[in-house]
Structures are given as C-alpha cells and as structure tokens.
Image (cartoon, rainbow, N blue to C red; front, side, top):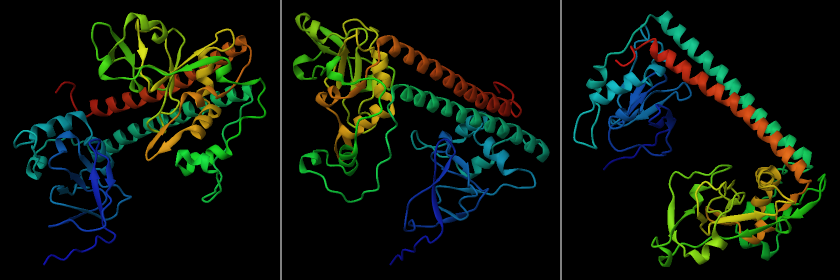
Amino acid sequence: MRVTVGLGDWQPITIKFSGEVLPRDRAEAFKGAMFAAYPGDVVFSKIDARNGAVGLIPATMPKVVLTPEYPVMVPDLMKLRPAYLHYLLRAEHFRHDLQRQASGTSGRKRVTPEAFLGLSVPLPTLDEQDALVTAYEAALTKAADKEADAARMALASQRAFEAALGVAPAPPLPDRPVFIARFKDVERWSHEGVLRDVTYTASTSAKWPMVALSSVGKVSYGLQKSPANRPGKHSRPYLRVANVQRGVLDLAEMKYMDVPDDDMPKLRLLDGDVLLCEGNSPDLVGRGAIWRNEISDCIHQNHVLRVRVDLSKLLPDFLLAVINSSHGQAYFRSKAKRTTNLASINSTEVAALPVPLPPTAKQAALVKALGDNEKASKAVAFEASELRRVAWATFEAALFEPGV
C-alpha cells in the first residue's frame, strides 16, 4: 500500500518558458521519487527546456521539491555568480544551443541532464560577471523608474481631464459584505455589481451640464450573425468584439456577412461612429474605439454597440475620453449585468450614460490636451523599453559573437 506523505514546508514549482520559477499549488506529494532543490540551483523541464523552461530557484523559495522530470544542477559558486547564470540561461544563443540538444520523437523531444551539462557557455572571471550584471541591472532600474514616470504622467493627465470636467474618480466600494438590496436590482447576480449599482451616484460637482447620452447621440445594435447571412453575393466586412480594442481598432483579421444593398444605408459604419463592446467579460464592458472609415462598406456585429453622435453638440473623441474616464468606467461597472464570469451592458444603459457637455470647442481643447499628455507618457514608456532592449543586447554581445 502506498502511503501519501504531505509536502510540509517543501514547495512544488513550475517553470515558465520565460525561465521564471513559480510556486505550484499542491497539498500532497507526487507519486514516485521526489528531489530537493535550494536557492541558486538550476532546474529545467526535460520536455520544455527547448522552449525556455530553464531557471534558477529564487531566494524566496528556501525549500523546493521536484519530480524526476525536473533535473537539478548545482552551480560551482567558485566559478559562477548566480545572478550572471540567471541571465545567461535566458540568452538567445544559449537557448538555441539547448534546442539542438533535444532528442526523441517529434512533439515529445526531451533534454537529458547529460545533454544539458554538455553545453558550452562563456565563463568570464567573477569580477567580469559582476560588472556585466551590475551594468545590466542598473539599466533595468533606470527603465523601471521611467516606466513609473510614464504611469504617473498618464494618471495625472487623466485626473486633469476629469478635474476640468468636474467629474471625480469613482470612490472605492464600501466594506459591506452583507447589505439590503431590492429584488429588482439582483438581476445582475453579483455582489459587486449590485453594490456598485446601489452606491453609484453621478457627479454632483460637474462644471458643465450633465446630459444622457441619448439626448446627443443614438445607440444601435449591429447585425446578428446567422446561417441566413453567411458570406455570399453581398459579402460585407463586419466588426467583432475582437476588433474593438481599448482606444484602437484591430483590423488585421476581418470576417464577413452577407448584407443586401438595400440594408446597407442603416447598417454601414460612418466616420466618427463610436463603437463599444457589449461585454462577455468585465474587462470588455464599455471597451471602445472610433471608426475612421478604415474599410469601405463595413458593418458591426450585434455584440458591438454603435454610438452615432450629434456632431454639433458632442465630439466622438470627447465621448470616448469620457467613457474611458473613471466616471465612465464606474458607470459601466455599476450597470453591467453579471452571471458567472460573464458581464454585459445593453443599449438602454449605454444611452443613459451621464455625459458632461461643454461647448464643442472646449471638448476639442480638452481632448487635445489629453492626447498630447498621452503622447508624452508613451514617449517616456518607449524610452524605458529601449533601455531594456539595448541593455539586454549589450549583455548578450559581451558574451556571444553576433550570428554565431
């Protein structure tokens, strides 16, 4: 009879293709032999090492336990610094050599411990390893600082936009694990959804008139996909939820429906139409972008809502900025109907969105300021990504000849 022994304070792990070592939830021991590993040990997955599943046990995991599918290698600390080895294992040249060591049938190729130990690696002196790691990590720190600056700039820009409108950020949900709600509100079947709904109030400090979206625009559903409109003689491209990202349209993959010419005038998207995702998941509710006539004779599916605004009163870019503000997002979260892991919002609730309405000239100025600040934030974020890219390229170039 096999006796199952608990793992105690020994931590099972998994290794991602990025080389990151993560804890694995498991309360009981695996069947068969188990092996110990400690901080600084190199571990790899026999079957996934060729995809990058090689890493070092971090200091945050003092006692790790593994199956025989994860060989453990103990570095010689008189020759290798753990930090240097950590980065070396991620180098493209090293991974390329590791891929060539895999053997076995297609789809089940493995890297054996012997093949892993047979790899050749550059071995600078300990001082040189320290210098490489110090330079690389200094660049990472600088990049992280720039990323933090970019995030602060983006947040400040959004707060400035909201302050100019007089719409305050949504307050955090109160700590009310138990509360009373009317039964008609429980259609959302979500503690968070009902609580947001019963606590949501529109801004009372708005500096401009607050109007329902329906008074300055029309919300419409798109065409439902069915066997009757499969692509045929009058095939038209249509937008799906996947095409509508936050603030941008992804038109790399378009699908088609059959729509007769007579139906196109009421279904055709026009320049300036604001498109919003109906839902499916909480992150999708109210995600929106603006149509700019990128494709001729394009329509939208019923899971994408179209808002066509009165341009004499409301600018599409301003509306999208309001929707993406904390005011707009709080409204959508409060109105989203929820089931298990699903959320959606209907056209009636979108049409009832309270929109601050300054003159269109002021709307244009606010949108321009928001866009300029966003560009500045993205420029700093790009500098951060370039710092990371150049730092890594410099680290690898110090160890491997280009193209070798």
